[in-house]
Image (tube, rainbow, N blue to C red; front, side):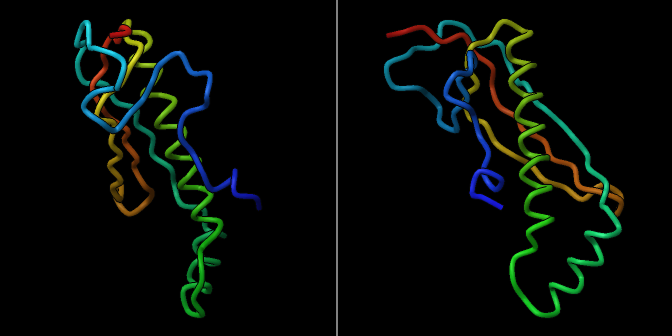
Length: 121
């Protein structure tokens, strides 16, 4: 597996800029739309759980689980961006992730932030 399978984030040609900061150098906030989020819940795959259990006994990275979590975060990000876009935003400030166990059957990943309309300063 290559490094691209273990990374995430925004592509260079997105029409909605997502940042983890309060502001964006060179831009000003013209309008605050409000909170937006993207949510997904992934169930655990029995095979990956068995593999993870065995791997945890001998140590090392749980590559299957890492890949699943990256895919899950990317899906939450896509949903976050779509929510901002639908509401008229072209930026998301203060983006964060929240990860929670969901009733012992899966993992909930929520990407959230503040949707805004950005203009060049």
